[in-house]
Every structure is written in structure tokens, then in C-alpha cells.
Length: 138
Image 1 (tube, rainbow, N blue to C red):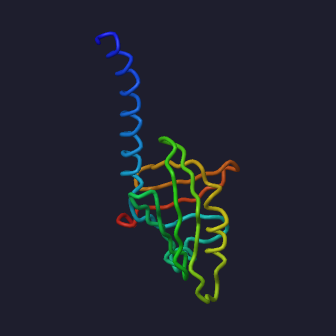
Image 2 (image 1 turned 135 degrees about the vertical axis):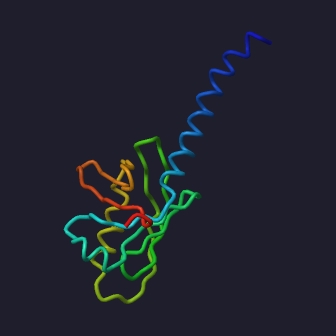
Image 3 (image 1 turned 90 degrees about the vertical axis):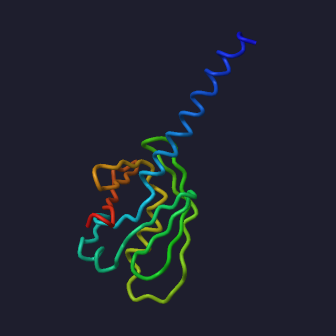
């Protein structure tokens, strides 16, 4: 029995550690984040549109970019990588949906994340950046 214990522990410990690491990463991400930098949009436009995302603990999130309600799924790969998918939107008649269209089109391209202080920074393979600040810290 003892000879099986060590290999079993060597298998289970990393799995437990990885699962806990993903949970800790989710706890850091789980928040309301206000968009402060994205493409050509000025900070004033982002504030006027109340551009924000809300990360939930169920691997889902929602966003508001000015008019429609946006929803998405995500999966944390590790402490640096994330995958967004299933971006959907309501279809309200809106005057200006350029920000919403750009956000919906680009969100899935962002595959890396980092939290620096009160900022969440998403980057993609082209080194494009989407930067957010915790809503409570603005």
C-alpha cells in the first residue's frame, strides 16, 4: 500500500494545486471593471458610455458599452491566459454602437490577462490592449 501512496500523492497534489490556483485567479478577476483604454476610443467616450465588464464566478460575464446588454463566457487557462467565447448581445436600437461592435468583435482575440494594482489589462497576439480599472477605485 505504501508503494502506491507516493505516486498517488504526486498525481493528486498538482491537480489540487492547479485547481486552487484557478480559483484564486477567478477571485482576483471577479469584479466590476470599468473600461479606460480601448482602441481609438477616448477615455471621455468610455466614461460617457459607462463602458464596463462584470466578471462572475460561473465563468461568465456581462458588459455594458453604452446601449445593449452584452454577455460572454470565459475560461481561465492559467495565471496569465484566458479564453473568451460566446459573446452575445441584445438588439436594441441605438444611435452609436461603434464601441459595442468593436468590443464584441475584439473580445475573443484577447488571450492574456494581468492584474496590476487596481487595473485589469487584457492583451492579444498583436499586443493590442484593453485596460480596465476596478469600479470601486475610480
